[in-house]
Image 1 (spheres, one colour):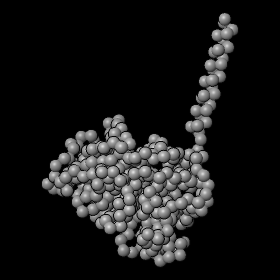
Image 2 (cartoon, one colour):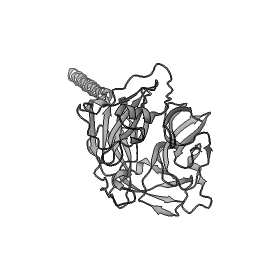
Image 3 (tube, helix red, strand yellow):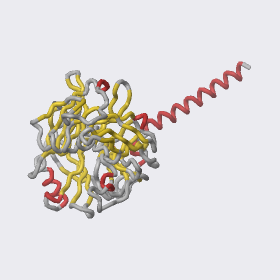
Image 4 (cartoon, one colour):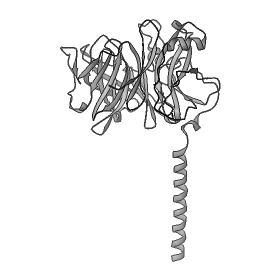
Length: 371
């Protein structure tokens, strides 16, 4: 009897060891293992986000899809890099053989492993523009990420809005406005084909299918009404008192917190507006960071320059649910007058960010210390 018990214990131990081995193997599997070599079919290249192992997610609003690309860019730098490039639009134009005014840069992100910079862009303008993915290293070298034979995968968005070229803004072009990879899921903001068309989707990676997103309602203080049709323009995942939120910024410029736990497929979710940053502008990018023991969020936008929000106690701000008198309310901020004409903002490391800046002349990339 004792021998039988011993055999059962040994067998159970072997099963446990095998299960543990399989678990470890699954955990150690590279995120690129699910990607298949071939031509990546991109119709447009907009919002970017990085996932594990240097996987780059590209939002293709025109195609109603997200494409994951293996950048094969997995080597950490030997020193802390600084990326500074004058006339990046001219450099890209020279690579693809067009005039600089025929290059449109749509988004910018830093590979967290290599610290190389990636830009989504287009060669030309209008419906026939060619999507481009551009890599810039610390030396300022510019190269194209070839899409001809690259390990990749894609997922179609089942709730993408239909094109409407007669609309003031074609909703299809705003299918994907921003993306972030969070805990094994790609979060995708933009417009959907639902009654509440502002959507946040959570898509597991590796890709299989994309369920319909949660749709959002917010109070827009500058407009004095609840809105469900305006898309999130930029967002970041953020923890407040131990709870995971999305901090989302909208045009004209409410800052809204949305509990991640509420973002279930098909759910209608009411966000809580905690700041009104001013009307007449569009937010572009947000970078949260810590400095000298305090929390801050940088917000780049089209009209107000770069704003530095004081984010130590976001839980303490009461919901804004009525028109604001001064057009500014809630979370306090400083306007950074030394940062002008910023078009893109991305975090480089814990101490530095990268900006793309310029108005009518050349576009320049510059590394700045987080203020």
